[in-house]
Image 1 (cartoon, rainbow, N blue to C red):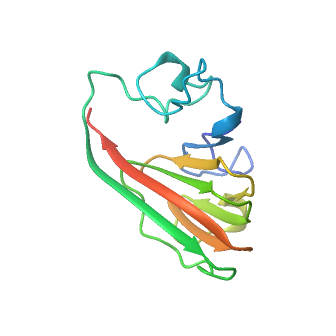
Image 2: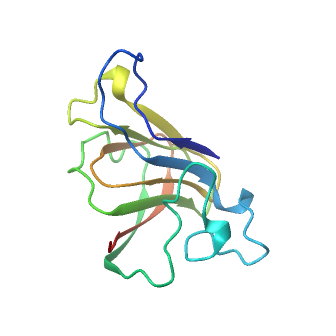
Image 3: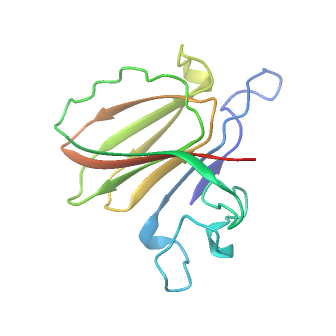
Length: 151
């Protein structure tokens, strides 16, 4: 699992932090339960708590999207800045779906983090205030879930 909390910039450049975690649901230790997002202690990773939702904390605005992307769709159109938390996961057959993240809508190369979802269960989860865009390099079925944890 990879966790990014900073942009890919030189130490002397200023760049807002981005909270992003990449992994594969099947590779995570879930104590045999399969629950990798939720209130259990094993949903906390060493560097990120994006997958952890305390049992006494409400979440609002739950949205779920399922899309079978043909190769070439989408072709990198930038999406609005993220609100709350979002997870996108490759489900079904293997495919290739690249997601890029940036703290600004310009997607400057030195600020952009790119990740490829290629195995079923591969996911990217990110917090608020991040721009993203995606590319289906091969046919890929993607499920995305968005929610806003209440503080």
